[in-house]
Image: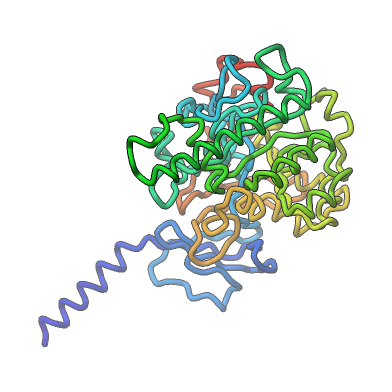
Length: 431
């Protein structure tokens, strides 16, 4: 009996040591999935959220590492649904449609854009190629954990393959000299024809029913677009003008793919149509300095108009267009224009998680989700608030009290950058 007791004690001891538990106390917690909690408690275990709630209502594990966050604000890590950090690139100038190109094969994980994102409280980002093509390639969802390669930080699907979407674009950027289209009508026609070809390719594979002799020659671009048609790969569509937005919705109705509208400078003009289509929006509040002609009617009213219409709205940085360190300002400017506070904060977090199809893992502080969170000095919508710490899967990835991290947070372009953007990858590549 004595030996059995020793065995049982040993088992409990091993479990206690193996579990890495941390507790953050005293902060105002904004979980997004519920009402804010004053004097809150956040319990982390092995990189996941174990519990969140008010002091006195959450059990603090014995032996856990305690972090006093009194006077601070804790939120879910921010999710950027559209970024170009990492020297990301997709298709080249040989064709306007290149779905076979993978940004996975172009990303430099040592690019300082990742540090800037962490300094802005971003824990998940969507890396995509530029808008100089009608289809510029396969995008990638990444978690800003420490990693030596892009595979180390990429989100994975259930089958183990890397997770991401497909970048489409219309409007001014893809309109160039041949072989690129010269008009909006031709742009839509080229995309429609390619999707029809992808549908036929998929049908040939289905008819072959595993017979190698009947299978069509392998085509990487067709394979990727077949994933789009099956709803396995979300289309992330750059579009600005109201007529271009409606063209995207027209194609979506015809082919049934899942789509997110990005930028949407004139969203307020067609907010009802967007909401009625059930299509989410990745919105940028402030676009490129100087902008472009098709963005001349960009309006801070876009966010409030989409909210009133009932559309799901997230924000993005388009970094390097707007700096990842200022991501919170997207929400603040939208609130100034009339968006509700709760919707604006959700647009930085859970709405963007839904946009990427990752809402079961990130975007809110709920038990079982990844321990991705940001500690702020004050209210997230205040211009005076600073990101103090950024945590990814229970690991602190940014700390304002660290000299190098502070330099990244407060320095200008190039601060502590081991790598910068070395080249311009073609017209519109950063937009």
